[in-house]
Every structure is written in structure tokens, then in C-alpha cells.
Length: 70
Figure (cartoon, rainbow, N blue to C red):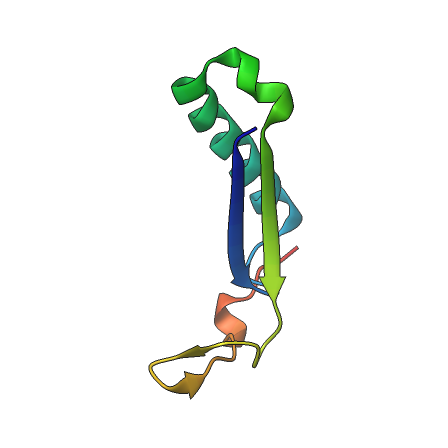
């Protein structure tokens, strides 16, 4: 069973964008593993809370201009 885990800042993607990523990722994996993989493919999008991770030794907070507009 193909499994993809994507981590993204909370609020960075809209529901529609997450659905699109899931569909496109599944399609990509089917290209490699054949159509038989589609019903067994798992795509997990995890949203990390602001302050829940760091970059360049700084705690990351997603700026408002990068937040998804639902």
C-alpha cells in the first residue's frame, strides 16, 4: 500500500487545495504502481500548529499573507 505523509503549516492550504494534492498524489503513484494501487493508496496531510516547528533555529509562525483563504 503506497503511503504519503505531507506536513504543512496549519492554515496554509484550503480544503480544495488539500483535495487537489490528494488526487494528484494518488494519480502520480498509480503511474508508478498501476491502477491496482489506487484503492490502497493513503495520502495523509498533517497540519502543524504555529510554533510547532522551527526553521533556521527560529520558531516558525505562518505569516497571515500565506494563510489559505477558504
